[in-house]
Length: 118
Image (cartoon, rainbow, N blue to C red; front, side, top):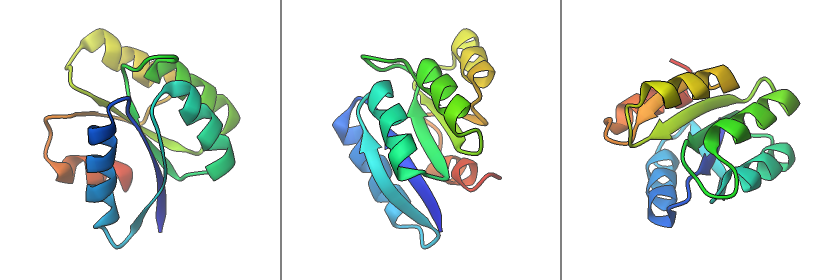
């Protein structure tokens, strides 16, 4: 079972992602966070296998949260999720330690493959 933390500042997006993920027999949504700081805190207490991380959020950005999580738990797989195909942001997320970068306009199969590490 792949344990996933969903991080996005828009509640409807978080809940939609959690719903899609929960339909998968091999994925369990263990928590949700609305900003990067919550993500860092929950990552240490919930110990997920993967985190779907929105790149643009209040309080703490996705790249900063990714950097902090990777320092504490380098084995957590982080999938950056964004509305924008911005090369600078893509680069920031990969430099921070994200393994994948998926656009919010992508088919759900692409996100699921990233969560599964494929």
